[in-house]
Every structure is written in structure tokens, then in C-alpha cells.
Length: 217
Length: 229
Image 1 (cartoon, rainbow over the protein chains, first blue to last red):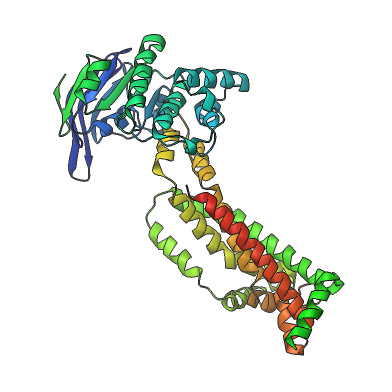
Image 2 (image 1 turned 45 degrees about the vertical axis):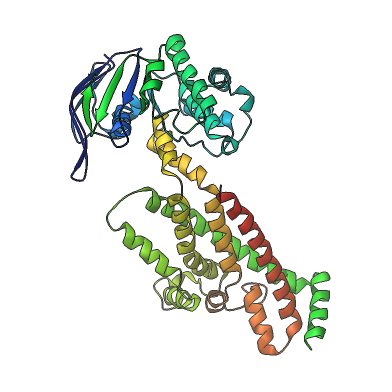
């Protein structure tokens, strides 16, 4: 199992935004996390990405129970990448953006060059390698953000509404990339969407959230 | 009289008068040193305040903001009380030295650099932090990402601080003593020349000071412009 969740609660002050009794996710599968705005999808992704701890409950990742301590979480984050709904690129070139994750892992320049090229090829953005990150459109930014996450070859790719802020052409491109990633790279993908048709294009594995509760699986 | 002084002053500037050059060099040396020292202390301090959450953070920022309005004579008096012959560190013989001016000027601009740094870091989009973390960055690596993103704002802080010290007169006069060729800065020399009723050197130094200030402002605005998307 990739994730096993038990009695998970997330509250901000007194407001409970997530209350999941139990949930399981398998490796190598695309999961669509459906639900209206405010259902708790992004919060759940943040927790699955080890970016924020739950208020209560337990999570097992690859059969190990997650300890929400800083050093342990940093180790787990090496294998789980979250791509935001509106990703932001560092104010440098596309190449350096994609290189970031590899550089902090201490990879050699040759290795980095090869992996950056590969990741940019995967999203069809290699010809933008020398472009400044802030000169790209939202669709191109989304693709570079995907490449930045994929470059480090994660076990899990979490995508928060990956197509919500891009035009229809880029929507199709991004959906194709996500499908390709799972098929070729065997990376598990969990993405949020409120578009049930879009979810159906990519996967038959859907989880629905409403008011922080899992309503179907 | 003004026209005569202006023509003589321009001639003095053009001829690179030795005394004038010496005064300008002393000014630049002192101001650069104090800006560098204040930067070395103020940037990490401002970064720490902006980057971390702790009880009393708002109070610290309020105190720093208040210190921005501190008059130079108050700082001069404060430092004087320590380095004067009967002061706590009077035995070090710092009074009327360039070091004394550097100490005073550093205290003057430390809050400027710290508050500008806090503002620069606070303006950085929270998504940078999240992005760095999700890509596997440690807390230190994430801090470096934020620092890099705020670099233009921090450079602007240094430029603004330099502009402040190069033009200040109170600290230089009180702690430096306006000794010729040693602690005489552009502003203290101008004040002295004015007292003597001789305006040529004062106007010449004024022209140079204005040119330096103009250059600093140009640099400041070009750097500040780069902080905006």
C-alpha cells in the first residue's frame, strides 16, 4: 500500500476541515480526488505531501507509520512531490528551476543536465530551458512545474487541480503527460479536480470528498 | 555670489583638488565600512525576524520601526557616553576616530537594513517556501531559496542605508570631531566651510554629495524596479 489513513482529522482553530475515518491508496495508480471547492482536497494533498501535519489520526506511507517530526518529514518529501494549483517558478531560468531538486540532492552536473533535459522533454518544454520562469504563460508554468517535480523521479506525484488555471490546449497536454508518467515511469499520481469528466479521462480510481469527509471510494 | 561660488566649485571639482578628494575618500571609506558592518548584522537579523514566528515578533518590528526615526544626535550622544574618556570603553581611545563614526553610523542604519530586509522577506510569495519543501529542501535550503528571491529587496536595503550615512552630519561631527584629513567627511567639511563663510569647497562637496546621492537613487530605483514582477 502507498498510503493508509486512519481516523485522520485536520482542524484550523476550531473548524474541522478534514475528517477521514479510513482510506487506502495503492502504488502505481492514478487517483482522482473529487469534490467541490472547500471539500478539503488541497488540505488532504498537503498532508499526503508531508507539508502539514494532521491534527489527529495516523498515516502509513509505504507501510511505515509517519512520524510528523521535521527531519523525518524531510526524508519522506524526497519521494513525494506536490505540484500546486497555481505553481510558482523561482525567478531564474526554466533550466535552473528544474535543476533545483537535483542540485539539493547533491547530483553531479552531468547527471543534472541529463535529468533536466529528460524531464523537460517529457513535458515538451526543452526549447524553453534558457527562458526566464516569469516569462511563461500559466500553461507553460504548469508544465515546467511538472517537469521540476518529475526531474527528481518521485514515487508519488501530487497535483492540485493541474488543469484548472490553464487553457483547453494545455489541459489536454497536461492530462496526456500525467497518463504518460504513470504508464512509462510507474509514478503514482494523486490529483484533485472538481471536474468528474476530466477525472474519468485519466482514471477509474476516484475518491470523493465533501465537507472534509470521504463520501465514496 | 552664488554664481561665483558655483563656478569656483565646478573648477575645484574639475581640478580634483587634493583636499576635496581626501574628504570625499574619507567619507566614502567610513560610509562603506558602516554599511557593510550594518549589512552583515542587519540582514541576518532581519531575515531571522521575518522567517521565524515567535512571541514578541510584532513588538520587535515595532521597536525597529521606531528606531528608524532616531535622530543622529541622539545616537551621537549615546555612543559618546560610552567612548568618551570617562565612558565605559573610554580607555580604548575611540573618540574622534573614524572607528567612532563607523560605530555611530552602524547603529543608525542597522534598523533601516533590518526593517527593509524584513519587508523584503515578508513580501516573498509563500508558495516559494512550499515549493522548496516539496522538492525535498531542508529548512536551511528553503531559507536560501527565500533569501535568493528577496535579493533585490535586500540590495535595495543596503543602498538606502548607504544613502542615509553618506549624507548624515550629526554622528560624524559629534564622534569624529571633524579632524582634517582624518575624520573630516563631506558633510562636516561643508558645515565647517559654511561657518567660515567660505562657500567654494562647501559647494564643490555639495555637488559631489548630490551626484553620489543621485547615483545611489538611480541604483536604488533600478534595483527596486526589479523586485516587482
